[in-house]
Length: 493
Picture 1: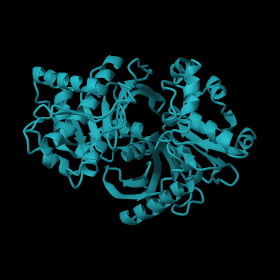
Picture 2 (picture 1 turned 180 degrees about the vertical axis):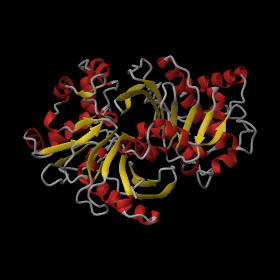
Picture 3 (picture 1 turned 180 degrees about the horizontal axis):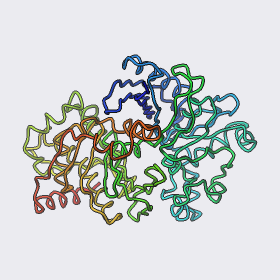
Picture 4 (picture 1 turned 90 degrees about the vertical axis):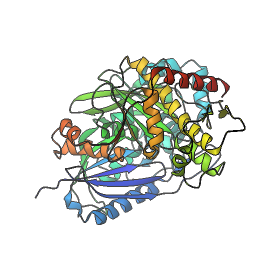
């Protein structure tokens, strides 16, 4: 009997999750394992690639046991990953040359500032759809090549390999046979031209990165190689799907048509809208990225991120002690019928898109003697929704497309009060899927499409199920009054 299970590796910033799905989208196993975070200096964040690999192998083994499956029951492996994190390893030994530099790391801030001062950002943005920021991979690679002894010499001699985490995992899974990335991850490096979807010579020269160190750019759904010499798996399983975590979530939410959008509510929040086969460049601080390449077709996306989502609730818990656990915020907020005019701008780490105000600070406005902890809790949930609404408004204006329905996932999407207020602000239905592991689902779908587990995207769309739908209840006048209240508070942040 042919194998019909797909194993999805969701390699995140703090841990690795492995999900095993069957053809009917039933989750047979889900296992997570955290790994250590390394902070060598203030503002520096690193991962040991061996820790990443160890957590991957361990979770694969445990997931197979939980599902009661053998490795031979797996038809394909899909990978989704923390995106901009940059690693460098020796091609012959496969050993890391240094710890990977994590997307959160800010050590190349001065490099980016100098490049901006030299007037280079407009050209970089025109080619990549991104801004000059340490967040992206290019200056991280440059740092590794310039600061790790012998790294640049190895790279120029073709003896070193660079990759984001997807590339490293495929390398290890295939025993070093495949040095590849997909277009969604490549589009986050500052080294790929969005239109050609190839490494760009001008950008490589600008950032001082030799072509010899880079992986091949492949579609998001394709067989890149097969497992070889992996402790947890037999040889010969196709590694067949890759997408960066946010693009994978967009695919996992079945947002296949232009205009469809999803928002992942985690510590922060990421909103992506499918903009179709041509890139849409933003003048409002949004990023332009490749969503995926499947079956010869390419989809682009606009992306906006809010630095704070679930982190605001964590602050109520850890900073103010208003709640004992994050899930308690909804119970507390429901004790009052509204926020009584209290408005919280949760700019606890500055403001991201579309405002881009790193100096902004949190503001709680409208407090009087009648204000209670419940009002503050409700205002916190509303503040998260207001930030997402600002992103959605910017996207609608940039893409010249309505958002017909707003799909949500991530831990904070389980909060019904937050989701209802989000629907009210957006004026469109909010849909939460039955299963919110959409990032891993996206990786599994991409791998399954490449190997015939699923025939096409329509089969996946038919299988995708809504868990709960939140219809807008607020009238236009009430909505505008809330938005006006938010804008006044935003000016004070």
